[in-house]
Image 1: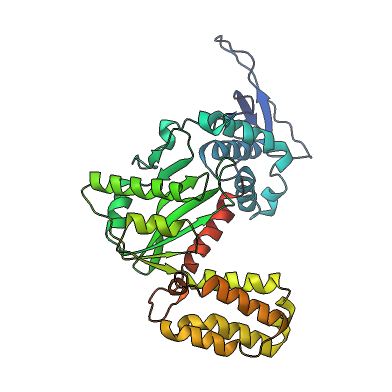
Image 2: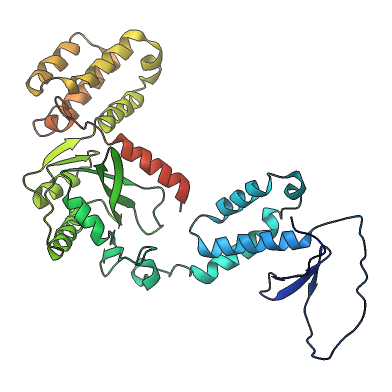
Length: 361
């Protein structure tokens, strides 16, 4: 905290200037040019409060709310935690109730309110580029039902990788859109996002729009997108769209999502308690999911062997498994025998972190 005998001009919540001296803030209402001589008497107050420091903290909160995309509560908590390092400052930090309105007013000046409909949305120029000034909004259609965000550098990076991971998340999308669909690649052992898409639907035409525009953009940059393997989360409409855009690609289902789907069925059949507490039931279900690691021709016989003599709800689970996962088109998608990259679970981790940082809309 600063020396309380300093004179300081600070901005107040009315966007005007206050003079802070001896821990008191004074509004500047009048100006005059004539010379004044006199004495300023120092008055000591037992109920001390450093208003200069408080004003500075309020200004920092308002500035960050107007400049950053973090949520207002998140910004407040960060500044509050920083002030809490000292007992002297912790007790004087303004409460959230006192600064909340000012922070949201500051944000509203830079972030305009949403229009009434999605069709009326116009993205200002400053939100179409990255912080470094590179074009980021690659495509948006007339109804704003599909928005693709990707830089030229990301397209070139995408060209250099043969394994793509695709997945969608739903918690952080704006109210008009249904999902944020992303394409990631592995680089030096790390998963990095290259393409972000906001979509209203998750259907075949939507995915066609995404891949067609990526291919067109790549052609304009004189590169050719040729993924050899696409790992996905068993999104039904995604397979034909990927195969139509990249005919030679191999579609690989994510083993994590495969197991997740089977365990959801376990819960739906009210087998969860038995799965958690009965050793034989747990072993049977885990062995069923582990058939994904067998050579493809051996899987049907293994499932039949495991399902021999099962009854009741376990038999119902095996019926579901054969019906949902053992069809000729479906079986190769979840089989991971001799597959190097078996899951895009790290992508799920990325989505979890993104959802936590961005907050739910």
